[in-house]
Structure formats: C-alpha cells, structure tokens
Length: 383
Image 1 (cartoon, helix red, strand yellow):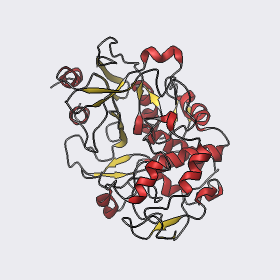
Image 2 (cartoon, one colour):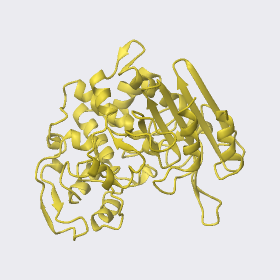
Image 3 (cartoon, one colour):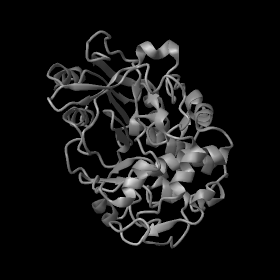
C-alpha cells in the first residue's frame, strides 16, 4: 500500500504544492510526514512543527469554545443571542434572496445560539455570490475568510456594520457559509467577558498544550511560519502572504471563522480531546453531550441540497461537517471536521478513533477539494 510520504511527495514533486505536513493518528500510533518546503523558493524545509494558517479549520475550535459556555451555564443553545449581541436584536430579512436589499420583512423569530452553530442564522454565503445582500457582506462587513485579519474592523465596529445588513433567509431556514463563526467569536468574547484570544488560550490551548495556536505568530516563531500562495493564471504560484505579513501582530478582529494559525500536533491535541468526549490530561474541557451535539448532523436534506457544498455525503454539525454517507472514497460516516481555504483539512473519525490533519499553504480555488486532499482522505480512511 502507498504510504503517507508517497502521497504527499506526489503532489509536491509534481507541483503545484510547495510543501505539506500530513498526520494520521490512532490511539498512541501517530504517522506524520513533512515534505517539500515552507516557501516556493525551497529555502526552508517543511517540518513537523511548521506553522500554517488554519483558515476555516478554525471553525470547529470556535464551536467548541461556544459549547464550553453552554456547559458553564452562561448561555443555552435555544437562547436568543440578542442579550449579548444587541446589534442582532431586530433583524430584517430580504423578501427574496435575489431581490433589492431594501425590500425587507421582519425576522420571524430571534436568532439563537443553535442558529449560529449550525450556520442557519441567515447571515453567510450561498452558492450564488452575485446576490445583492452578499455584496454587502463583502463590502460592509469585510468578510475576508480570515485570510487578511489586519484589514477587518474591531468587533464592535464589525457588528455595527453587520447590523445594517439584512438577513438572506429567515433564522433556521437555510445553511449559509462562514459568517456565523465570526459572529460566534464576538459572542464568546461578550458572554465570557474576555477577548476571544484570551478565552481560547485559557480554556483550550493551554490545557491541551496547543502552544503554537493563536491569532498571531510571535517573532521567535516566525522562522517556522509558512508562506501562503495562490495559483496564478499561468499555472504557477503567486505569493499571497509572507511569514512577517498579516499574522505578525494580533489583529483588531480575531476571526472565529478562519483567523487561527497552528501546527499538525496542536490540532491533533484538539481532535483527541473530541474523541475522548471532551476530556484531556485528566481534565474535562467539554461535556460528552456537547461533543455529541458538535459531531451530529443538524441539517435537513433540503438544507444540505441547497447549500452548494454538501454534494458528497456530508451534513453539518456545530462548526464542521459530518459525513453521513460513504458516497465518495475517503468519506466515513460520523467523520467530523472541516477544511480551510489555505489548503488545510482536519477531522476526527470516531468509528476508528482516528485524527487526521493535512496542512499545506496553497489556496483552494473553489469548494471542490483539491487532489492532494482527496488522496490524503483515501489514505487515512483505510490505514
């Protein structure tokens, strides 16, 4: 059988991926390989502890933090969030998704925490990015997918801008991508009374030993931080961000949707905690019930079909996808996690006790997983 190094080297040697770290863990057995370079010039070899932009692989971590507040009794899943997010106290909804943004009706009910966790609050991205309301999200709420953190306004200003944008659908009606995780990040900070970076560090990163995970890369770790690239029109690579760029200092807006940087071993620690039903190092970080809620599909079939993303046997839990049918190679029913637009993917597979992490630094060009991810998933589903 092809081994993990062979899979990674196939895509690095033949291009266009400069380098990658792959990790597959079951119990105490951890297989990890680092191939290629942290930069396209080949000056810095990729290493197991190389630091990557997680992008949307951040989302499950943000969801776990929100569930900690549920376990604390600070907020309930069915509770309206307007108590902490007054900007969302009286939302309006466009009468029709393709219609003018000023043709609105009142929301039929308040937005709840469950709406945010399941991405059904009415804010976010559908498959059609040309809709007028979506243009407002880009222009007014500065939705950058967490890839340009220094260019997004501080949380209070961001929420004020969001409050001026109508919902695309009624709360609970449709699954829409991304924005709900950023709203969750603001909610976590306000409910806890702590900035999101401090809350995550105290409640998750420090207990789990995730020493290289955060919203910035300290100066003494920049030598381990990978560059980030996009494919250019000629089939080559375009440098999108350097190690001393967007993550060299803490941003005004710490994005719960995609703002974290991390390593393969750090996400492994988080994944192992989920597999252990919320326990790690003799401590309980999450209740078993909260982990089950996170890793259970909450969407209806029509919501999955309308999403534009769940075309390969997946649904959505809290902050991540859940495989519900083995319709393509690599799918394992019950697998939970998510991918990042920077070329990352991180999942747990409860049925086999596995944690799988793939980190690269080449941007995805659409919702379809690139060949490297597909080959990695085929491998991690059978080893």
